[in-house]
Length: 164
Image (cartoon, rainbow, N blue to C red; front, side):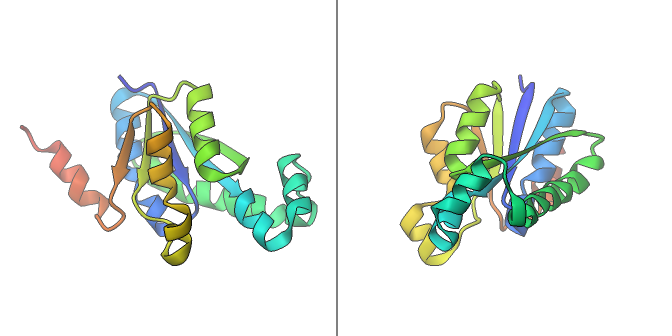
């Protein structure tokens, strides 16, 4: 049913809440688990300018190397959640507008399920831009499992294990 699963992360604690669900599903279905971090070029453009975005998109991080390290750290934190299930991950780091990069990757890699949390961006930024999860769900035909960031992972996983 699920051969390819994608769990995007922005490095936040909220995003990490999706990891146990994605790991359990990947373990159950013996699926490949892609963990994706998107360097948000839209946000960088607003703060540092479009020249920096051009350099990032072409892989010329230069002094922006810390962005790559931040992405790798976020992926490693997801990896900590997946090791308990014995699942290895396929780390993916891309630059772009997060929801667009997630949908593009999912479609190009024939992902069967995207697992994301319902929170990430907060306040005015969320009101103006909408949540990444919402945009992914609206712009793809791939199923999206939305995990409430306020739920403790063990609550939902324990309930899923109870016999019907």
